[in-house]
Image 1: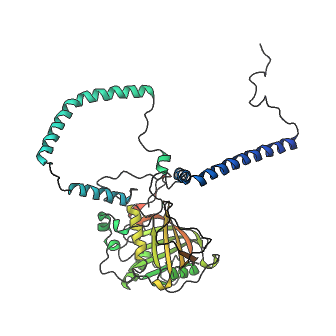
Image 2 (image 1 turned 90 degrees about the vertical axis):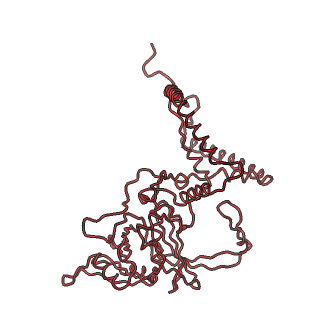
Image 3 (image 1 turned 120 degrees about the horizontal axis):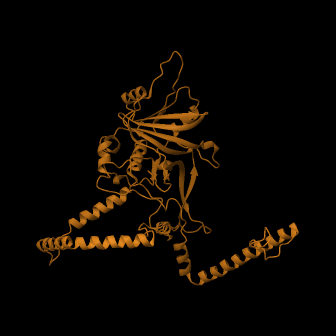
Length: 428
């Protein structure tokens, strides 16, 4: 019998360990530098090969695509009832429209010479009879296969892997096409999707009771054209108007939207948007609020109506939210002001930015402008755009969509944000 404590030697016991702590430190630094030098030498050699053969670089860039959450995004399965229950599903509206158009084109395609409907019907009848005869045999063979697979182990999934999804040609950022909104969504919210006889945009902005966010509310009046800020008070001799009463007051005075800015610890924490006169009501949370005067190199905004850019709203709920923001800005911007408001949706967070742009000539030291495919854009070889942020800068996240206008209790909602456990599924 062996002595107690003797057994298998620990890993790395054959290597001679340096007793001195400083010498061990210098030895570790030496090995680390050698490893860095070896990697640098290998990359430098590969760079020389790419300079000789540009195809190697193109192949490397094609394969080395970052595996982000946007590229691993998953969608719900789209069926025939998608348009009716679209607010709760994460489906790509553009993909559904494209599939329906392809089906209609296939049905409306004229028959070529030699094709006959009667022959197709006979073939389909024969195929159905053959399938009925062979169904029993196929079921027996399927049961045998299932038994064999269960004995071997787990089946291989038919879903694409994360790497295959990452190398897909779909882009994470694209401009929103508002004409792709589902018909059922437009019928459910006609006031948001109607384009005939539109009222001129007029926004009423207010705050919560006894709010201290007067400066931030004034900044919002500068961001949204044709908007007015009215303070709310909770004085003991004053009437405390509710949101429904304020919405009725604003609707009687031809306002098209009502914005209520909420606060927490004297900072903006929420924004309630009511589309007048009958709703719906959108509840957003606000984070990362930065005034324009705190931005480095900021500019001063003018009274010109800005242009509006809506990015990456792809689901039915995203289309509904995009149409809400569209109603807050005049449809005809003033281009001479060169101001643009961008609402960029990324992982269900809406980033709000306002810039002033200017076109200038390209400098010799600047690189060419390339698109998402890595190729140089045609028509923009000698033109560059300079941007100056005007502010404010903040981030919105949609929490709830209510039916009609907000009530004190018993409020019915169209959509409500839930604790989504899947990090790769987004609602907008």
